[in-house]
Length: 563
Image (tube, rainbow, N blue to C red; front, side, top):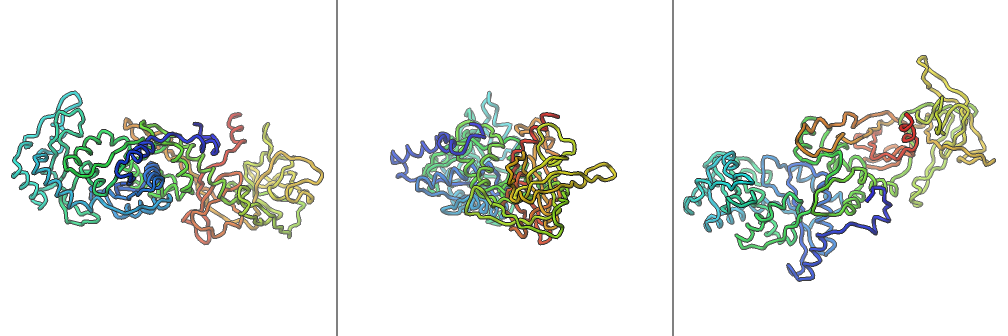
């Protein structure tokens, strides 16, 4: 579907949703007593990104649709990478997207129960303590063409395994000295079933349990059991977990506990976007970006700071659908939903990003008029505001050409244009500096054309925005482009080579005074320029705005083609 398809058409042509169909069928068959209980289980080792938004919308959305529950669970089994900062940011992001949870849980809440179950598997002869190093475990695992070799420690007695596991728990061995492995099938065509590691030794403090543990369960062991403890009915995961599903099922069946149904769906991938937490962390640590909430980052907090709305992201996620095949979505499709939402809610103001002085010679020097301007033509309730108009204005430098090419209908010598909400003006001359650059444009105005309409019915081909020089606020405007010039899809090259050197440009702008004191995240459409958002870096003396998305510029496209 084209990213330019009208929203109304998209609403009636939403993609199929195989997970919804599974849930409907389960309810009709009375599975789980008709319950629907999902969970969103991030690891708190970084900030959430736009890919997580799809999972959030899916898990919380399905639970709400079917009158069920959705848990927020932190899968915090790796103490060396997880921090409370990430926990707090994840909660903030989920709430900002418009969702709330039926309970907050942590995998670390279950460390005691998971340990008991590990002992149960040892006693049943289904788990053993192994002394192989990590490299040896990988070497023994075999290849896709050859079965793995059994560990020489695989047939230790139950008593010896219980003793060694207890000593592991008591901290008698150094990191990496031993692991607890599940005894399944070293000849399985699925590598995940070739005696996977359940526990490793890690002498590290945990963000919640401190130093209470020095052995930590692996994610594959923790995942299904956590779902089971919480009574999850539908464990919805991305496709990389499909090969892990047999192990997920094996654990809950071996323990004889409630067995949720794991269902996999395609990840959200966007062009010109990196969604690896590891790589995003590098961007922060190397100070390539200003932080996790840098507006160029694909993190949810980065999108929020840039001026995206939760409504736009939810609508985008609803329309891209879910499938069993990974693909990549064009970034402009996300921007389509953003523009559609901001068009309805963003207040209009006038701003000039590359100021060129315009002097109206026949306008009284001491006169200041208040021009009535519409706040949002899409929202009548938004009302109107007044904008000061005076003898000296600023216009966009690109709105003037001393020697205009064909199809350029903006201001040029002898040409008349309309000033938005103001008057008709006609260019009479220019002032240049010693380098021959135009620094000032002179015009005359028609006093009878106030409001932008000529009483004699004459037409002009262009309407331009402006700000009054005496009343304009000075502001810093940050213009963002994609952080990457190419779509990062493999590790065959240094991914940092695709960084866009032009991802951020900073310009000094002039803006109408109505934006003074705007709170951070206040959203505007700078008329004819795009959507912008007040940034948290704004101060009483200097406003800062982030460009959220551009508007389409017809002339820019024409000019580019003619070069």
